[in-house]
Length: 162
Image 1 (cartoon, rainbow, N blue to C red):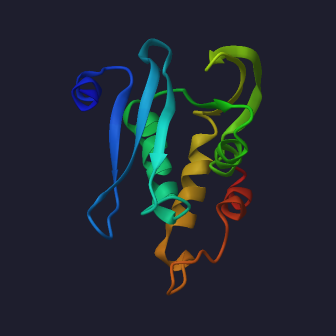
Image 2 (image 1 turned 180 degrees about the vertical axis):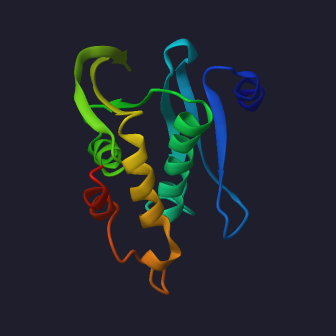
């Protein structure tokens, strides 16, 4: 079955996202298109369920993934790709600090249709400022009693030049 294949896979590598508040599985994301020789990896197959979608936990999951790539693996480049028609995914990439690189026109054929792919990346020299921005945003002091943010991640990115 699918789970056995996912568990055995070396590329993509599947990661489970756990909601700390409930202890429940809340989503998944993969490290894919792994190129260790060149220090490149891509986040993909993202599913953040209702427990964490559009909540601080989703941003924390993204932060921990970037931290793993840059700080633990020592990679140079972290990629995010999506269907160019997927505006929510493009907005998320930009909010998280990925830089838009361009459109690969007719990159794939999906369900018999041409798909243009939007490419984004974070590179190692950008990571230190982004790490600080994420740290500031994720600080519990940045959230009110109902869990609402006081300042946006984009504001922290501007503070740190990320």
